[in-house]
Length: 350
Ligand code: MG
Image (cartoon, rainbow, N blue to C red; front, side):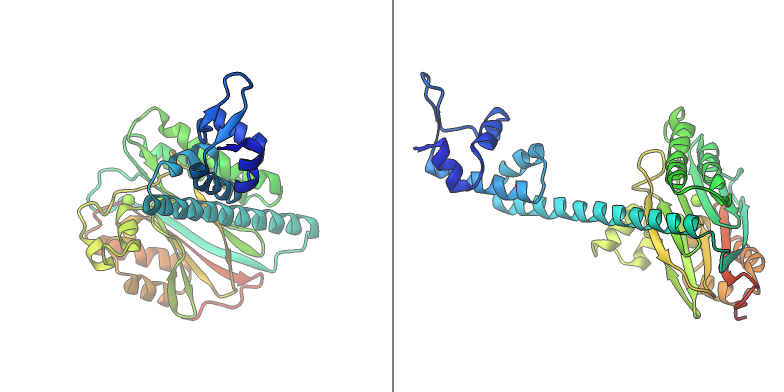
């Protein structure tokens, strides 16, 4: 038996921490002297104590540590990896948030006239099968947004989310307000769906900060970039089939006919959207679309339509027509924007 002092030294936890872990039932001593109250630890407990110490060092919360300690080594290893993946994802999101805030503060401080600006168009169409349109599409001088609502309150959810973002189109939004407005969009959409179970909305939006694009995204609406003739998808679907593709259990071809291809893993109203920064270049053409386009028009056809359209208006028109030619099974929404210099150059190559 080791005294608490000797045990603490051997496992590099402080006596104070050991007393706390005893109270939490995470690492109870092998014996407590009934007269003095002194705690004694068995040598065999060192391994667990050292594991606890390491898990604390990587910042794992105590409740989670208790769960990990109850697992066998292989399962514990999986838990540690999963925990760390989550920490990195959260850190990445905070890093982007910090960059976004710094960008915005810089542009507010400089008050330079914008060097680059957006030329834009947006349209939403019910398609050929659905009785109503639950999609919302918007394009303005700084904001592009597409929301695809579902369930009985799908339309109010989607339009509330986009509506909340629209104030970001105003010229003089302060940095603090930008972040509040993003949060507000999530909150308004949540409120819009609160009373109708089974309703929600996707939200994919691009906000021009004056030097970069902030990408707000949740669900399976998509953002694409056409740059130098190549089409790049810059969002990741929050769907079951995308997660199966990521795990290598499904090919993109199989996903197209998967019976649960429309199943969302995340939507606005349940979780806050992802926020990322995207480096933009003059000449870039961006497309936001609902799955009514991407599920029926092949990416190569989207690329061709985007590359050949003279401007955003023509691109939106062609893409919606393509979805309807393919049967128009769902509502279809597109927002397209070109990033150009203030005098309109470079014009998009046709
Ligand atoms: Mg849809």
